[in-house]
Length: 338
Image 1 (spheres, rainbow, N blue to C red):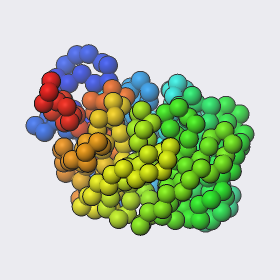
Image 2 (tube, rainbow, N blue to C red; image 1 turned 120 degrees about the horizontal axis):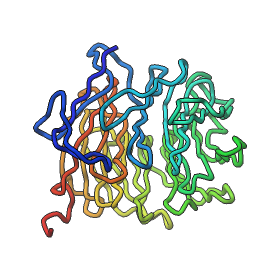
Image 3 (cartoon, one colour; image 1 turned 180 degrees about the vertical axis):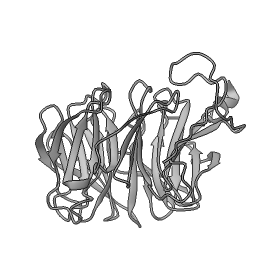
């Protein structure tokens, strides 16, 4: 398999200074890496930056987890075979990479060496024994790891990542859990499901606090950095913004296709979405206005994430490609006042 990487000339990425010498430059401020085979369908299901922005992890359907140097595009590791990465997440200190996927398990890795540190037998009641864990997230303090799967009843769990001990089984969803996210203070866990609900949980007690019913299945959930907004992306072509403390619906953003993934920028001024038509959109979460639209892969964008400094948006698509886009000052809703 061939890999290609294209970097915008003169751009300083993720705290690295200096001028890049790209293999090919794109005038729209984007570059691409990952699978370069047009006939491949090794869909990228998850992308995640390390906290320092120096590493990018990708998970895919093709039984692979890969670790990239985002500065050079160099493939650093292809993790152990038969390790499908339906979801990948770095711990807040960057010392762990968690992957959820095949064989009902969560694996914890050393991202600097590629060594497997621990395996958690997570969801033994999953519908598909080889495709169990589809969503994982670390709490902001790194003391908890949440996982969701395709289980019928026991499909949402909290773990101690330092020991591998299961702490809580959160019961309430009646269908697959597609996405999990912690609030910035770590007190709440949001989960989105194919049962057409977003549920909020107390991470200390495991108690369900409220269930927000939606018209269609939920693909992605995300908290704003200040914790005042909870966003959910749905199969009904909408992004819903709610108050996580009260459950009150605040705003509905309407898109052109089903929303597969959403992410807030680190400053909370942008909300990115990737949809089934391959469109990446940057929204103003306070007004719902579309600020910028980027055409991605025609077969759909499956995962979006901002770099820790907010200057880069990375998206994984359903053909195994990863595209990165420079997020300029003009994309921010208050840029006109600067």
